[in-house]
Image (cartoon, rainbow, N blue to C red; front, side, top):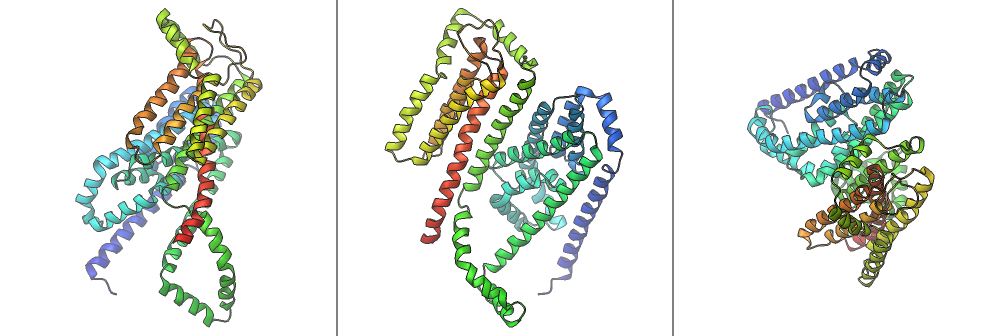
Length: 495
């Protein structure tokens, strides 16, 4: 079919414009890696010092929040920040936390700018460059089906990273669907590049080379994956499959592919039925992984810091000063009651009753997650306390034997959050987010009561929350995978 000259010209113009943007971006992005990064590292380390936190955080935010990533790839700044940490000028764990938070904040800002301005702007001005309403509706449909994967994987492709959150917002993607992919993607991106710079701080040019090779490899894999997806969609049409098989059979040097394919089809279909996710699995699984990533990072980073230096952090000192300034007899009495809600005898008793209720209702997946999460907390807290051996604060208002990190009460209090989330996931419980919010508040109050009573530092409580969140999310991820493998064969048989 021959296109009208006007449409052909418009499409050629759009293609040339896209090619020009990509070419300019490529040329600009090549300039920074060719600079003397080792000299730049020396200057940054000597001049900025602790101000490197601010530099990395600002660039991590602006790259997507203001589109700076189209001009200056953020990987370079992340590598430099990691290298500065590798020379001992700053703390690498705090740097990752700042970069992670700021990158997520930049993604969210770009998303909401896109939601507020993007769609109307595109619909008003898009037809001038060939983006009709029909094409934009296809973009909206794409982000509805594949937006999460684009946000996650696109984090490692500079041009996609700078534009994807804005496009996701303007295309009508829901923020609750966007959030877990953004949290997981920004965490992986920031951690990977900062740690590369950290471990290669003696040769930052080598770190940039390895990071560039990794980005190129990822880009190649994305292109291959897109090709596979297009091929699968093409072959879903029976007529196309028939033509392909007929063409292969007509050639002697490709006929063997048909024979092998027919023999491998039954076992391949068996495996495919068990590995292909359906429904909302992708969103739920990514959400669980995002919580697992954040919780694990908090636990591990604090553990690494306190293993070498168990003294109070600046945040711990500030929190302790605030707690001391607000102490009153009536508040202390309330604190002693509230803190008991996170004690082992209360939480484990409630967990046992919950397990019985879940077993009576044959909700085996939730029961397994509950049992696994409680077991990890029960074993992990004392093991970490013994390994880190961090002394407790002095002058506590209640008796608390043993070491400080992590807080067992804070870890155990995450049980309340998990059980309300499990209830929220049931159908017909649309208003149960209020219950989830109340459980989060309860967990926060229980943890902070330990700081108020002077038996834990704030970092101990944060580590406890992280351990509890990681324990339940890890078990939930395993439960989702088991359910996927069990349900997909039934879905295939019923279909």
